[in-house]
Length: 171
Image (cartoon, rainbow, N blue to C red; front, side):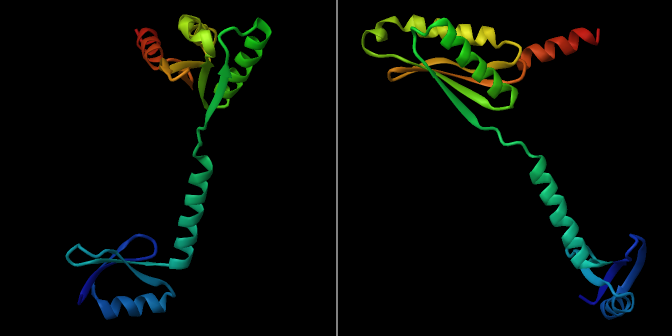
């Protein structure tokens, strides 16, 4: 690599220089000579304070990690013969989880002869979905898995409903 296209610390192009000349300029100005694009012809090098640049990159990554939201799948277990007060308590917990931005896996557990009345569990899960319509939507429809019937709810309004209201309001 005999020559490089040099970009100064302000982002202005200096021109095509000998590599030794670029290194001399970097030493004079107390900057590092960093190869930005080694595959270009001639390669592109830039004057910058590498330590400061690296620190700023780490800070930006740290900030980006802070802003990412981790969704957790919470779990709520019910029985098909749940009483009204217990149902309302569980519904409140599910609502809180959805408002916090978590997905919720709702499970109806069947014991013994209850297995012959799976429609009760299905109706219970449909009732939960209906009661939480504005807070969350059903991501996975109710399905049997062994002795349990599971349904997954995700936070927010139903995606297709949001698109429909957006198109009608713009008309």
